[in-house]
Picture 1: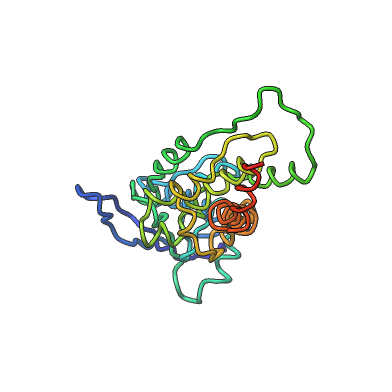
Picture 2 (picture 1 turned 120 degrees about the vertical axis):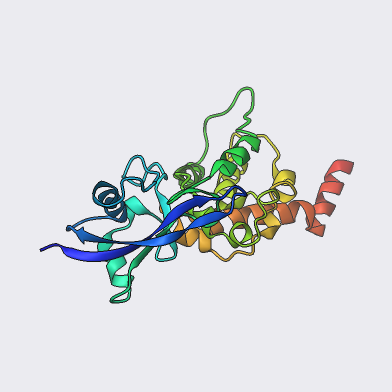
Amino acid sequence: MAEEVTFRVFRGEPDDEGVPCGEMVDYTVALDEGMVVLDVIHRIQAEQAADLSCRWNCKAGKCGSCSAEVNGMPRLMCMTRMEDILEETPPGEPVVIKPMQTFPLVRDLVADVSWAYEIDQKITPISGPDEPDWKFHQQEADRMQEFRSCIECMLCVDTCHVLREHKLFEEFAGPRFFVRLANLEMHPLDTEDRLAKVKDDYGIGYCNITRCCTDVCPAGINITDNAIIPLKERVVTEYYDPLAWLARKLKLRK
């Protein structure tokens, strides 16, 4: 006989003023071997709550659509195995599933991530030389490849306290877009100077290096050490390092 587990799932939608309204509803589901959390949601939809809203697409950890919070941790539901969840859930307690709390609610487990598309459009794309030299080191290629593995699931944004707690959406680009900016800033063929925007428009100074974004990244990107810290170092060198400032002055005089 299949094991039965209780899942406490958020059900609701915003009111007329955009404030999330709803309740946590319990569903008892019979588990099969090898199931992931998204399988459970699909079973609830098929057998108990056909109107339960959930965003998903590939079910392979590549599209980033099925982001949610399972037992309080931002995760991809399609890549979160139930056997692991049951190990961390206290005996007799339900598995709690909520939408991403940083973003506005659409309905049930669906969050509104349109802010991410707005930020994406503000970032200047790669701007290379007229006649590029396509020869560069393998180390540079490997560094860019890590950044390009981002699936835009927004789990890093969901766990970022600057956005989750302080709601600085107009002043802070968030970890996902610092990954994109690092990819562009470190690209050997890119000629655009983005450091002023990284400092002022995208607010990298708000990040205090908690590494929570790195911890939840399903693509394994070392967001903090390989993207955010190098960008911070470049900003410091450009705007706050007195020796670098003096060297630029001397170079200009020559």
